[in-house]
Image (cartoon, rainbow, N blue to C red; front, side):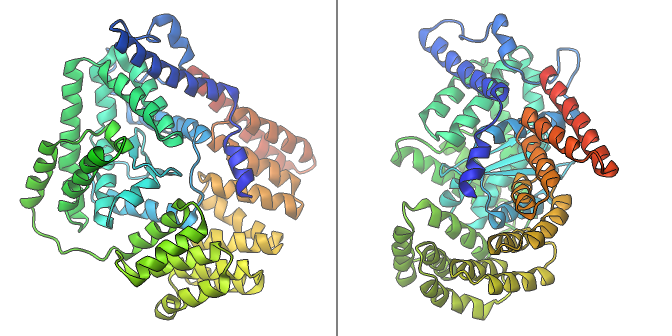
Length: 505
């Protein structure tokens, strides 16, 4: 199923591919033009038609409206998903969403409804896009040593959104709106796919193309985001010193690694910035160091996958459990996950059992125990355990997806279908839910449902042509079902409007 998921991700329409390629090509052209000392290549008027990006305002419109920001954010998210591999780990997604939601409650952000995308990439990066889109690379977990450091990066990105820095930058730059927006898109896609120097070159070129006054404005944005982000951390009961610590680690990375963290492409860190962050935090009330175990559990999940093989992950966590570790429970949890992935479920259960004895209802441990059952092909116990957990925590996204997946693997397609249909109404904007629902519909024999779910999946990934194909098939098959026929026809009209709007942007 994972292979099929990856294939779906990579099957975006040619139009979106051309759009992103055009963005990247423009960024590279800017780099080449700057190196040659001439005007930026690709920034001419005749080339603008290759970049179908929103014009967020003109010289007479003032700041872009919040509605326009939301529209841009949703379109950007679809474009990004069509090109970048995102995580389908429901437990990790839930953790990041909850972390951002908690921080947002203490942030000056007016619209606290956020769309969160977790990128499967081991580089250290996070970003915010106007309209409430926040992206986090899984590599951020590998970099941040505790939850407060991780949260400091998220709080900084929320600060950029709350202060509307992107809209203000575009207003200040006016005539360079399209090159800057295209360069940022291209660089973020490159950073999330290659994670290499190409992204650095693209972003460097785009920033260098701006005027000195615009760069100063950018520095002001960063200073303001530092201030607001640190205040948000403190209000959320987290250590404001974590921001300076995180900056310090990023600066060290530029000395010891061949290339800096991707986060530094848009957030340059200097000794002065670190000192300012520490000084600001020193003026605040000291907050005792909090227990970061939940964070370390999520970090362990990522670290298992970061190793070349499950066997190597087993060795690493065995060494940590015997020696120095950030959190003993997390080291044990990571070892159990690695052992199960290595095909040793009995050993994994022995490792996990002390955690289950202490906290039998902990979602991370329940899911790990169920995965051990699934590896043993003990589907009855897996579904029973997960059902009990969902009964106790009926809104837990990770447990619900775990239960649906267990039923799916057990061949209980009708049960999985029932769970996912209900869950899709709660998480309408989650591509992973629609993907698994489409697979389940197919095996349960609901062909109309397959087309409907796949259409929703493709809509969320910006592949409107394929979404319309599935909706047309569904409409034909539902000709004798008036209600379903009407719903699918209306959805076709919605998608056609989205497609037209995308062409206008």
